[in-house]
Image 1 (tube, rainbow, N blue to C red):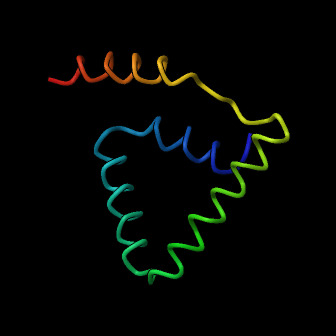
Image 2 (cartoon, rainbow, N blue to C red; image 1 turned 90 degrees about the vertical axis):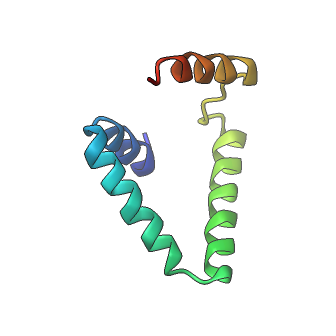
Length: 78
């Protein structure tokens, strides 16, 4: 499991208030980047995901499953 996946899993286990605070901090950190830094970050992420996919280590989920799960989760929102 990559460091990103470990951090994501741990972050998602936080209470909603803490996740919101973390999200705000992350967004603020992005606002400090200029356009070229953002583009570089996206390209690096795309390249990493491509390498994981080609190496067979990426987990792919069919779009219909993703949409079904998203709709189920949205039904749970009050």
